Image 1 (tube, rainbow, N blue to C red):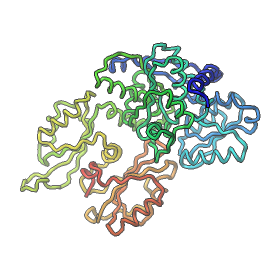
Image 2 (spheres, helix red, strand yellow; image 1 turned 45 degrees about the vertical axis):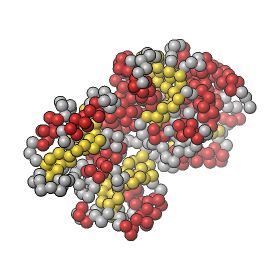
Image 3 (tube, rainbow, N blue to C red; image 1 turned 120 degrees about the vertical axis):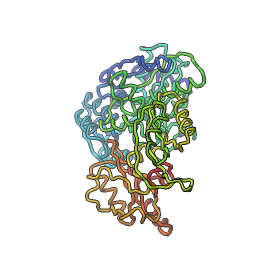
Image 4 (cartoon, helix red, strand yellow; image 1 turned 30 degrees about the vertical axis):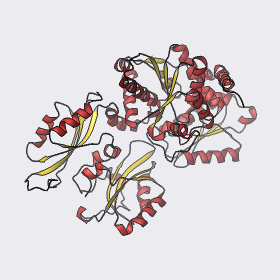
Length: 547
């Protein structure tokens, strides 16, 4: 087995000799002046969105293909991918005159499928998830004698991605900290091994999406492990298991791993747009989100040393329909909006008095419907209570959020903070309609014909409502198929669906289930095969939608 030093030198040699510039370009290192002033650091963005396929993946794919023998190329190459690896491999194969086949899930947006075909590759749409596409690609590779090209867990692919670090060090020799997005780990492994060989004092930080943190899980276990599920927003890094080769290198050469949530990623997308007018995909903005979080942590520790920090903008293949979600969530990620449930008296002048109590802050959202619910203290007060769902704009100062809640509490308002409540942000804010009301059906046209949606005549007839959130692969007819799969065994009391242009649809559904039916009901849910989570006790549901 090679020693630690020998492994590093081998990769250093591979990276220096990688002929990626036959097809890739050297990308800019852009200073982010506004963000630098805000965070009091010298911040730069390595612009891999400038590649011909708008992603760094081209580097690794091309470096792998040029290493193949003529025999390995006779029957062509194949890969499973829903995005950037597919496009990178397709262009690299076109450049080298190699036949490429890409297996993509049927959930893949048309823009990505069309781009792969535009580069001359054959596309086979198989399965509703990456794992199903991957299984199919392995079978095709075996049956058709094609060479499989792995998207990250391959030495030549890792070396190709490492050329990003070579450029970076030439452009900014005095870099102190580098933030690299992590999916399967190819980019982080390649960059870390190169930078640590030449400048060991550089700090390398991997950044993962909180709901797809396969590297953090591997670090904890001491080896690659499978995640039970992965998030759907940052699809470019939605990997269930870190690579074996990549994990070995990351363990040796990476200093730290940071995880960020979807709201923080949305805030980073906004920062990139405001400075460069580039719309980064969620995975592409991941590293800047991690940089921002790191700076806030350093600031809280009163570490005021100014450093040269670089984030890698790894890709800009954004699905246009996802922009609505980004716009809705970015201010939460910047800590510039609070989402609150506030109980106010049901009487004239209450709204105005509440607005005055906000101290001039801007209200971004205000949802209310009369519920007819008496005061919670059971006194003989003639006034009823009103529950409002309200968004309030903040300045972004970390202390202001709590100060707002404290000031409202001091003014004798009952306040529930839903700023970090995913159910409230994804569903409830669009459904506020008074306690016990059946939720809105959105979009209505998507539920026709309503084959399996049996609504109740009146909320008063709900015996026992159980609430669940579901995720299902998004493709034409997916929502109707979801409803058909649910079947007609259970009375649906609430239903809300929103499509953000992602690969997965998200549904909030309520069911009438009495105690005697629970065993059969949960057995039915398990047999459906959908990813689900019970939300019955979620405080945002209890506040606005529960009977």
